[in-house]
Image (tube, rainbow, N blue to C red):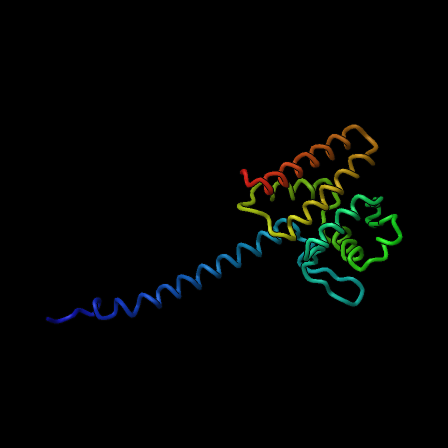
Length: 180
């Protein structure tokens, strides 16, 4: 009985094919993940603060950080129209984590209504759950829009900030509940 070349190469070629398909899948997955991060928060790709460069800054790494984040947000926190971020509580303001949050709030989260609506559009096209850092930034953007709504000088501005707030709230709720 004579084996054809296909039968001889079949079992040995299968692992190589699987490896090639696996590598191809990983490359595509990595590219899609990078595109999603850049599409949602373009300011996060590279931030220059003084002499140091911060790449993709995040605030929390543990549950204690999450509690601290909410403590800072519940303290008198201000997003100034000039772009500055301040925490009124002196003890909280002196923490290194608060300075990390300041970098995120000043450099990463969208500050203009047009940018907030671009984020909302990106969130509506999001497949699956948000990555931890994108969820954090979306939450901080929600806090910023709430303050933008309160500080609005015209009814039209207030309505636009309110619309953006509701849309961000729905996006966060959708991410938490897993309903799409």
